[in-house]
Image (cartoon, rainbow, N blue to C red; front, side, top):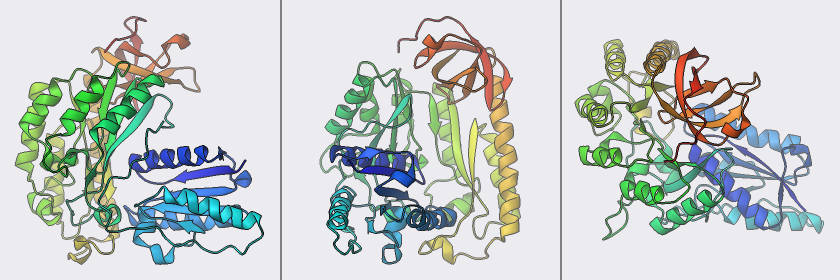
Length: 442
């Protein structure tokens, strides 16, 4: 039996796709190993969203060839797609037809077993492909929550982003296959599923003559018995509307946690980013969510030090972000990507200033999260209990994605959604007590 070692860089979509390919290898008789020294195949899923991710991807491939010289080193993903001529792996594919990598790996392994000369396999990248690649039902590796990928690619071409070039145009998965996977995950015991994709709000827009949307997907998954909670991945504000938010508010199983990417709180910078909305539109979305779902948690992404951003615009962005009362802010220092429009923008912000502006937003992120956590003290939270920490505490996440700790020795709480009252701030979240040991039936 051949042994497979897998390493993944990047987003939740990459993690899902790594799980999918792992399942494909298992079907061919491979056994997953956590020890790369035992591996016959070293599979690397790469990322190129930032220059650092690109560097780590190349480094990971080189290290694999040194650490496991006997193994077939296989690479796939966004970094390979954008650097196909320079890939040093034995076998590689980009972001299209990833499943082909299984056949190519098996072929190369058999060649080596037969003492034939090993040659680098040619890339299986079809840049003209516009169909969603179906992997079948995928059991995610997360212990308590599972991921369902519903879409790939992006049509937005934000000026700083390389992903549309690496992933291609937006492509939606069939509704039937999504619901089939949700039912399989429910039957496997998962109580929470996360809807993921590159741009999940664009779901269904590429279906000619059909009227199906992200809202329909959420409702379809909500109808699956055994699924207690549904969580949405990152969303782009330009696709959201008051009617979409109103529909979300009426779906009981949907976690009232919305990650909506802002990227900048300056209208001029948003225009330079090619984001197709302004701060006024974004603020209306925030207010509408809070009006319909007062306890909702809203999180976001911010890019610090975008080219041509002035000090005044940075301060404007900080002020706007603070006014939105985000429960969490993910801060990304700007990273230039070759081939994007932002690469040509001037003046370029110096690395020192980018670092300083990043630190400003990180401080705002810390304070915003603390304010949100304090606001939940004394309030009832439904918590999916996920694990027992090293110090003996139980922990899990609320619907608003706030980490909640519990002092309890009862392992029956694990893997269940229970009612908790937070009592105080603790570590990266809050600590509280259970209202009851009765499982919440959503």
